Image (tube, rainbow, N blue to C red):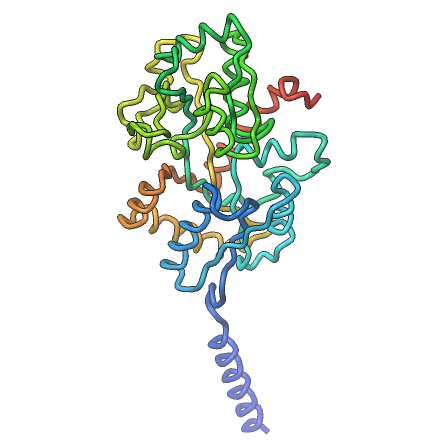
Length: 326
């Protein structure tokens, strides 16, 4: 009898060892990143660069799935309803995501708090540009003109986009009468500005970092970078704090893009994703690839990412009347 019990125990231990040995380490399958924007744009390129280096450091295939619609919330909803196993992630942008749910016409009840916010990756500061033959040599010139008449500044996106928010903040701070000229995308906003149909364009460093010094048809004069520090891609352009406009000191604007997941993402999986991103952050090839695409990298992880998003939301909640959302 004792021999039978001993044999049974040995068998149970062996089965346990087999079971433990069969447990697979994450990730053991392909990962998909949902990008709620069409392919080819800045968001898509940011998501694909992130996918490339997650693949490098996680050792599995990582692809991007572009799911448009619902002011980007069709894609976001797919992320929110995913399993917490980390095989379906999402790419989000700010302030766009926040504008999507603060705008009451969308009927969206979710907020950034319903996601696991993994890391802010791309930080693309806002800029104001004019044509090379514009009478506005400086941002101060444009501000003074905007106090006298309702000039249109083209923006790549409707109410709540980072470009739109920047124009409205200029009005709040300086008493200007600028009108955000909402366009479906950056290309349309650029066409309006270069065609001389508007006074200026609100956009981002990535839109003109490669051409702002050219003498071609796409040349522009950049009036300011709305960030706290000099931008490596436009080192000769003054920051907003260097422009000498007291009302605008500390007024920073950007399009930020980061990696998110469903709320119940497994904690061990989260840690492995963060570890992979931290390796990518130090990778010279990643840094060069981002710079070549005009992407500023400013990684903010988990809690710091949440703090950043909350700050953006607070700013936008203070502008609900400006947007016509209350």
